Length: 156
Image (cartoon, rainbow, N blue to C red):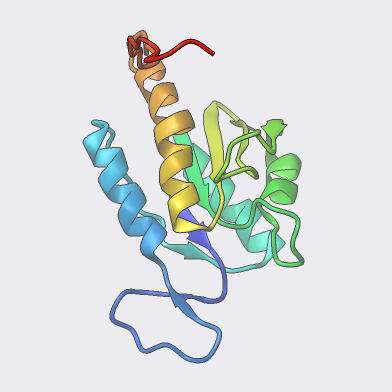
């Protein structure tokens, strides 16, 4: 997994104007480990299409599943989906999920790819709702959606 963005800095590093801490990598590391996955932290990718393509290829050679955080929307510095289209295949993009609409899904060689948004809450929601069930399925489990029984208090 990796984050994207020239504005990202490590926790504890000094911030210049326009920079933010990369909290998503820490969240993804914890979520992946909680799900029983062996997490490989590939750091932060610059907002550069050639660098992203190289990192996607590197990551797909190392892992069964690649996750990126940020760069999957349509902003001027959002290069992940374009890089994915060049080195792999986009299977779907812009799921109807709030928060987290610009989630991308595809393949890079034999590796599965999930591109999550840069918003920290959207990363966690996207992971819980999309990536974690996929991890369970890849591990041979039959993920079941949560089921809750309820009774209406009144008729309308």
